[in-house]
Amino acid sequence: MDAPFSTPVLEGWFTLDQREPHLLGARCASCGTYYFPKAIKFCRHPDCAGETFEEVRLSRQGRIWSYTNAVYKPPEPYVANEPFVPYAIAAVELEKERMIVLGQVAAGIGVDSLRVGMEVELALEPLDDGKLCWKWRPAQP
Amino acid sequence: MSKDIAILGVGMHPWGKWGRNFVEYGVVAARAALADAGVKWRDVQFVSGAATMRNGYPGYVAGATFAQALGWQGAQVNTSYAACASGSQALAAARSKILAGECEVALVIGADTTPKGFLAPQKGERPDDPDWARFRIGITNPTYFALYARRRMALYGDTLDDFAQVKVKNAEHGFDNPNARYRKKFSAQDVAASAMVADPLRLMDICATSDGAAALIVSSLDYARRAGKPDAPRVAAISTVTPSFATDTVEMPDLATDSAVAAEPQRFRAALPRKAYEEAGIGPEDVSLAEVYDLSTALELDWMEDLQFCPPGEAARLLREGVTRIGGRLPVNPSGGLACFGEAVPAQALAQVCELTWQLRGQSGSRQVQGAKVGITANQGLFGHGSSVIVKR
Image (cartoon, rainbow over all chains, first blue to last red; front, side):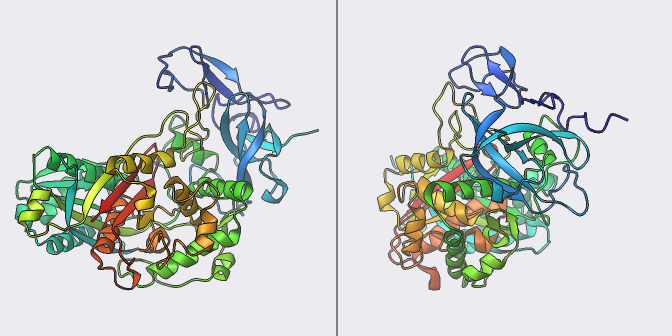
């Protein structure tokens, strides 16, 4: 069996550096457009025929564009403990990449502690099944 | 040359959670539309079906399925799939046939039987499928609606009571609608007392999934004249445009927006009615009523702005002033909307057109919008699908 807290929930979507994790994106060599997830073969900019991409680490800090939570257990393929513990979710704006990325918010941080515009950073935490996932948490001063 | 087509007849099978085969509902709706049009089934030359993905092979070939159920009579068939816009896409296929002179009268039809609970992705381990990946990390459909709702609160100062008032209004509108699934009036307190699903949205802010069917009989204007229906409501525009890169909003089922480093962000929901207005040669000031996709209460407010009924941020004010209720200047969702129907995906865009047709004919009874002349629909679904249809008298 794999070490329970080192298997990513989605292989190759983020680095496994616990201290300063990054989401792994792709960047078009022709027009500079970023992609997440990184699996891309043809640039989607309608005026760009780019087919060459470099893997890039996306900014690990951003600002909350909006947020919510999941009060009910999601259906499969999500795996949840019983009883289900609700988690918050944030949509985070990355300034350099000019894109918004979704993710759960770190355990124990509810919607009451969040607000639009708040600075957050990327963290890694296990989901209920022990698989590692990226999560957003308020930026550490 | 006019690019309009006539709506000769409309019909629906009531929305509900009936648990029967979707074909049954479709046949009921089709027969109602044929009777309403005064057109014989044998005279229909083209059957344009909206597909359902939840009922096996017959659902994938819905056009043929309904043609067989009504009795093969040699008509041409088509099936369209465009998520929530499937019905509009099927209508567009019929319009193209009619305007190309390949047929004069067509049946457009959509029906669905839906499972209980959350809509879930197909089984299997499929990390390359964005729909599978987002469920794997716990992002469900209500997540997206809630993110948009919270954004309105932060940007425009919309309140939970504003969202609740959308439900209160739509529940009043649909109370008398015989095709609606939920016919019960609710107060803002009822909404506030319902279970939280995805903060700030509660159970009563979010629409359910339903069984149901809707059908239209459409024809060339010449056929309508010969059938003695020169004044039948007309389809004046069908917009089914895709988004334009770079999308400005994180859309179901994606986990990220496009990056806008090389192209300015574009708002998809606003593009849909813009194209419809352009095609019909009219503007938002000409609209008498609208049927919009209120997947959530807050989303109805987004649609009002995307339909250009008011500048961004002012939809809640219009709601509070009663502009969007029946009797107001611009009623929104006089049918009761998805709040009273629940969503039956391939039938929903057609149900919106059925409502506009009844309203424009003055046949909507207690929910009649007085003097309705122009109606517009708007909806949006997964994978860059959406539509906006304009019907006028």
